[in-house]
Image 1 (cartoon, rainbow, N blue to C red):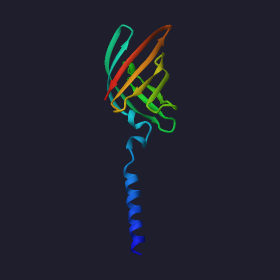
Image 2 (image 1 turned 90 degrees about the vertical axis):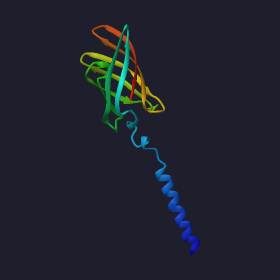
Image 3 (image 1 turned 60 degrees about the vertical axis):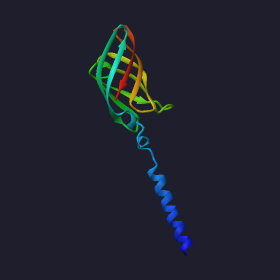
Image 4 (image 1 turned 90 degrees about the horizontal axis):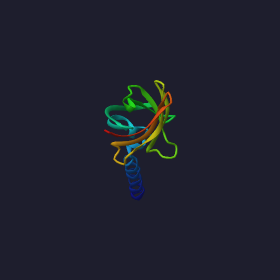
Length: 133
């Protein structure tokens, strides 16, 4: 009887250790991206600095809102890549501006590096930016 009690206690401790060892970032595939970022953007010959906020749009579809992406003021939609959960893909229209690109978050979860192309009325420009929390 005493041995059975010890086994039960050990099993409970093991279950407790496993459940508390989970990483909270893995609860939501979107969680690591959410927050406010100071973003330095380089598009062709121009450089701008602006604040961008990333918030959840739809967890089931792995969609995010990127508010003020590119310093344009509008919120665009991005989606977490199916093959790489540290990458978000952008392919959207916002205020007659087509934006296509991607961003990858670093291991520390405090910086996203974006590369993207914008086009509007036949004029296109390639951009890169670094967004830091």
